[in-house]
Length: 275
Length: 314
Image (cartoon, rainbow over all chains, first blue to last red; front, side, top):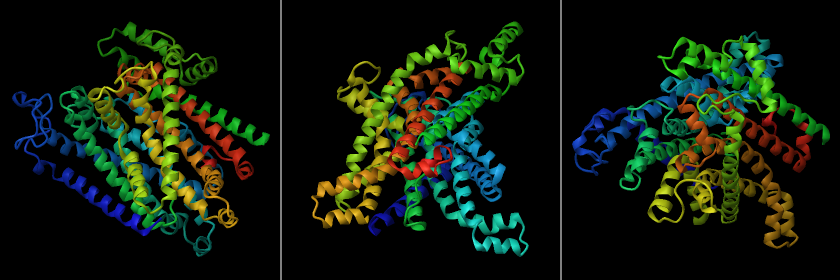
């Protein structure tokens, strides 16, 4: 791919990610209303100096709901990706390094998780666990960890046959030392790419769950639910569902561009996008 | 070839068995007593006990599992708590609608993505290429439910070109299929482009050019091999398509498995949720099997090397 195409994605992605993280961090200072504060006098009002993006049918400030909603989305996305990264890395290292029966067993568990369409598995888990931040985080962790496990296993398998590993072992290095000091650092690059792209996927999945009403429960200002609610006013107030959708798009686009740019930087040949 | 097919089939059956075990175990993950969760805190102990019997919760877990596995091959997936009808009947009623939508989205996604990918690769570095790549980046990032709402707002509510909800005519299918297929089209266009660009540099393609073959024949030549990786990745992406169908169906009131699932979850109708999850996983696995077999036919190397699960063809 041409150099020209490679540079702008990383820059644009970084910019969007910084924007979203800034809004999320400084939400209380960037908004003039609480996201849950109702004002029946001002319901369904258009954009104004007091309500930048207007209000919903309860008179709640749409901008405040979007700004504070970013906190829910980012928290769930970051924690589920972090949990999946940790679990997947440990499983992948153990599986690839020790091999044998342990590898066989762990990889069959991975296959079992991969047998379900990802969003369906998340739905099933939320269906039985009930709604809430922890259920959604757990459900998303369950659909993401296999990617990391397979990636780390593949890297561990090829690295553990290299001479430097044999040398370290014969010099008396422990398994833990070889795994975490020698092999794991080789996986950092690909893991960073996968995790960045994973955050985007997690945000889409989280907002999808809350769109259906199975995410974090209202009145929490989740993007998905704000959007679903806005859909009821599609004819008269299209903006109510357009604005939260744009917020999701901008955030996901940011992480995807950043992830793609990072991948091209780290591995110009291109790592197969596994999502 | 026969050995390869048999081996893939055995893996398919074993994985399906594992899936059924997981699905039957879902009920055990419900915090508290599923019977109380369904009936509410004010239910009488008699009612709770009766429902526990219906759900098989009065039995030890291995017996409950054995019962579930016994029922699966004969299509006995239990009874819906809310609709009081056999789960398999409810699913059979809705399945055609979901398959229709998924198939239409798949066809649109692959065809549109293919055309975009080829154009993009041939016009590499041009404005057209850039436009296609921007479209593809937006297509993979846009949430499917929001895209559905936008399309519905514009083409159904504003311009009145297509119906906004329901199923029946071909017109009903257009917006949901576009919504669901667009993500796939974006991925397909990127894959076809990348794969075709790789292939166009291969020796045999340069050979064909050197022999003076016309452009379209050279491209046709290159495309055959460029499509191999595309087929396998798209097979994997079908899982995302099935997940997206739940959201798309909700936006367009499409009477398929997705809307059935959403209702079942809201009503905490556990047997119905289990049945739907099982069916979705079965469709997904069957498609994986099909992709693996097609891949095996197209590329003999796979047959010899293959051993693992669905990952083998990636």
